[in-house]
Amino acid sequence: MKSLRHAATIGVVALAGAAALGAAAAATAVLRIARRVVTPSARQPDTEILAVDTGAQTIELTRTPDTEQPGRYGLFVGGTPGYVKLGAVLGADARSVRRKLLTQIEPGARIERPAAFSGYYYLAPGELHIPYEPVLIGTPAGPCPAWSFPAPASKSSSTWVIQVHGRGATRSECLRAVPVLHAAGLPVLVVSYRNDGEGPRTRGGAYALGATEWRDVDAAIDYALRHGAERVILMGWSMGGAIVLQTAVTSPRREAVAGMILDSPVVDWRTVLRFQAQEMGLREPLPRLAMGALSTGWTARLSGAEQVIPFDALDMVARADELSAPVLLLHSDDDGFVPADASHALAAARPDIVTMPRFTGARHTKLWNYDQNRWSAAITDWLEEQGFVSVGEGD
View 1 (cartoon, rainbow, N blue to C red):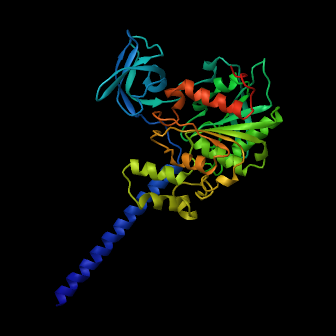
View 2: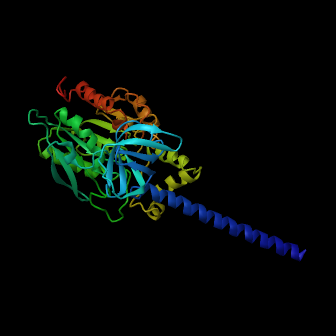
View 3: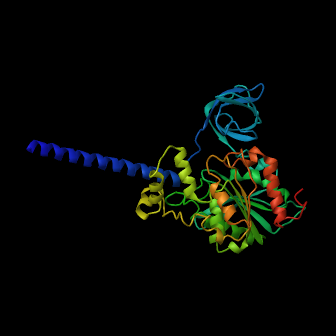
């Protein structure tokens, strides 16, 4: 009997120890997930270069949902080129895709196999052949570099467009939109913000998912108003959409926000994070616990966040009634990274101000790449419908 009690005691202690270890492992996993959400990340390879034909100027990549898409894209490459532009798909099989190179690669160029597929296409503003000026915008976090594209000399407008890039991206992401906005006669300001790798780094260096970054966009609005703007259109890409939406409802200058253009936006972070967790094979309750960790003071700090992430405040479907400016919402149903569900929910909640043409096929923030003509026409048509430009002015 004594030995049985001893064995039972050992068993209980062992189970308690195992439970404690399991709880510790789960807690570690939760904090790791939470940290990934708020930590700026470097661009990671997502495809491999299998072959380059410098004679035919073609490149063969491993086949992924992105690399198989029609249109024009970019590719970050280790080695001599650094970055190349890609054109049409010329052929594909079960594991590879062959595309036309739009950047000349010379024989003998050193090219590493790992590569990162990109929707940027343009890397630098000079590639657009549109006059621009680099400027610095003073923000509460410090000076933020920006590119200022004035309106064409033949046109003048007191409505400026301020573009905001997404998570893990740079200002280059926004360059695709400059030509259509410039052709419409609108000055364009392409901005950076805290902790994006170009703007100032705060003490913790973490994203707040729009909860603090909006202050840097607010400073950009102030800059535009001091340099001739009377009203602004905010354009946000991916997380830049979340930042723009926060600016529109929080900024003391929100009366100057006359409209918003959102490309593949984060409208509700909970929807996005649940989707991405599912794609990574993470099951509940881990995603819910990770968001809970970011919502609580001490666990938020353990996760690397500088402050609690206010997921309720960042849910713009729930706050749809607070929006007043017209919105053009461009989001592919086949986005693959930020699901379009919350965008459709916002459009359904505010059909009086939200215009959302249906897009399919395109991947995340790659609508321009997939169908440049339709994407550009959607913007031009909306600008005319809202009275930001005169009909035919952008031709």
